[in-house]
Image (tube, one colour):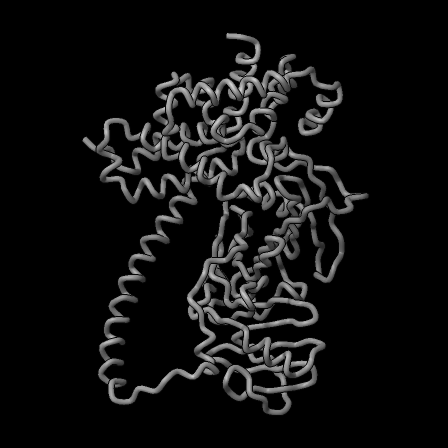
Length: 175
Length: 309
């Protein structure tokens, strides 16, 4: 039986927002992307609702929207910043010693070319294999491997110890 | 899995924790779906009306066709284009009964006053709540440090033109955001509550009331959807389109293919239901040319004026 669009949204909006947030590195953009996609999905719900896995279909729409959105907005794109993230979700104190390193890694991921970033998210966040990523991105498996290899090379190359000052800047948002 | 891959996983997990609450997305979705439904109804109604008008016009005009006059005021009407200056930020809480009366599109300004307030109360010291953004942090020396949704913020109150205190609150989100409140019992508390409710989810794309050589009006205000004004400044000229008369008296001059008024440093003309006024230190010819270049929206979007949340 085809689920109603409203039921689908109630169930999937948070997972979609979570995926879009990780994909875009920007909670505001994630909200915009998910809104746009759900609006379009609603218009075609008769068809989308009847496929085997509607959430997978809509997730792919989110991916495509992110890729095309980024192209449209490339000229005025705003790089990831702590303030962008914290303006939507207040920071929570993190006492682990990895915190700064994770933040630094996040900054580097946010700077990756969009397809590389999408491939990295699908591999390391969604745990997809090459063929699933290829299907999601609409490219060959070899291209997926190339995207991930280049992304890893970039992230590894830039992976250097953070200066001591970074921690104090993060601390500002927690006061 | 090597160290880099582990770090990537941890970083993405950290990012996922920052997923925004679905509330604003669901609200925006609801609003857009409602608008779409309304649009479908309007398009259907407009389509039927157009068919009737075309049939009638065809019958009436078939025996009295005249070529269009390029100087005709109607030639300056344009097909509506959505604004290129969307309003990004919106409050999701306002004092009870407040409605929107002003939009400044360059700095995302939105101003709200109590429903039923007459005239343009946001300029005369009456109760007012407004938000706007800036690129830089204002001078907050002597302001109290507070927090807005966990972010550092600064607030101060002062005795301004309002009978009571005015509170101003600033904090940094993607931009520096400002909330100004006057005319409520506790302006500080109201400003804080409004600020806490501000989200970057507005994406209001309205149809600008007019454009000048492709540049759209940057300020729109009014007391109701039928009582509004819009402005665009292009140094040294100020162009206004308004449902209110500009109150200019002077000598006749031809503007937009009809008779307008020329006064010292200004020309004005009534075009349909709106006045087009151009003022500034320029020759009459330049003022007239600018007025002629103004392109009016046939159905300006002023439905938001006076409306609350």
